[in-house]
Amino acid sequence: MSHHEILKKLVLTEESYQLVQDHNTFVFEVPRNKNKIEVKKAVESAFGVKVRSINTVITPSKKKTIRGKFGRKTTVLGVKKAFVRLRDEDVSKIPLI
Image 1 (cartoon, helix red, strand yellow):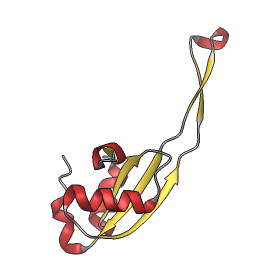
Image 2: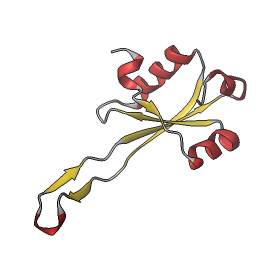
Image 3: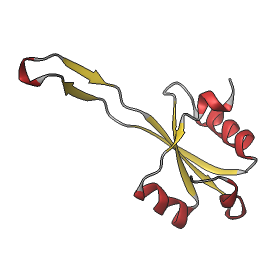
């Protein structure tokens, strides 16, 4: 599997920018069935950096009502996020925008 299929997107929020500045940590959305080892290999091959550590979290699913109270209710699955911490010298190799 290529790194394009594993690293869905780079999460760009105020909190993720703060993590980059303070802790050299980038946040990626990844498929729910991928583990830390596969994410580490994908980041290292995609950007040519060394990963120090990875933490993953799966956000909870949400129920969503469509068309008011008489509409259908669907479940929006949560996403899996990978918090990838890099070495100090490798932070500038990942473009933020």
